[in-house]
Image (cartoon, rainbow, N blue to C red; front, side, top):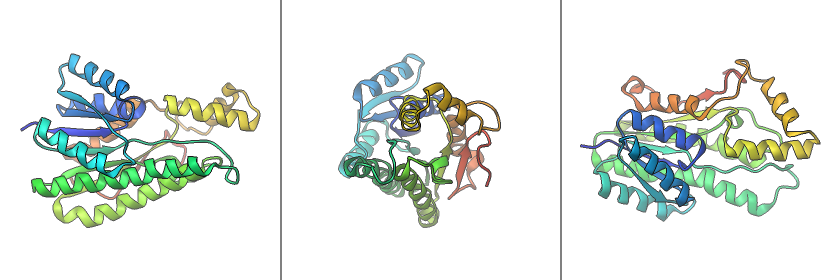
Length: 256
């Protein structure tokens, strides 16, 4: 039977990198993204490379859409093996000036979206009866909070908590739940973060990037592939005995 991976927010950035990497491991890929045009492009590229793939439009903040997605994917591919809660948003602003609508949308997508994804995947894995893997996008900002990213940091700390709680509850069903904590990954989202942070600090974008780079022990930013390799490992038989963990992928910015 076909092994299937659902990856939310996989129309670009880290999620796109994860989609390509898991396809290399012979998973059928459900490319789920709020931007259906981007999702279709990734799915088409995967198919051109010989993978099974299909694009789905999804707003993870809508619980019904998340559950419907799982049902649609099962009809298409037969069985779920991996669910990656990668979708997320961020905004940069001071704590006291953060716009309520920005805060609410971020928590709806990052926190509630991950919650619904865990629920939907776990229910499907329980129905299938032989375990599965749930992998969540946390962040370095969920290990040590970032200035100007109060809501984002709060959501990522919470995702690490969800990961632990779900891992404890779902272990009896042979479902592992883990998270990856990226540091600075060069994606369109990171570009927007650097631009807004530089504007607030009165720096050029290049100076902002240079200041962050000094914090990375390995001397370079991460690529989506760096993160995707960790997700690939968490998806593999090598990680059978790993659950409830959040793995930093930050090039040595912080140490636990």
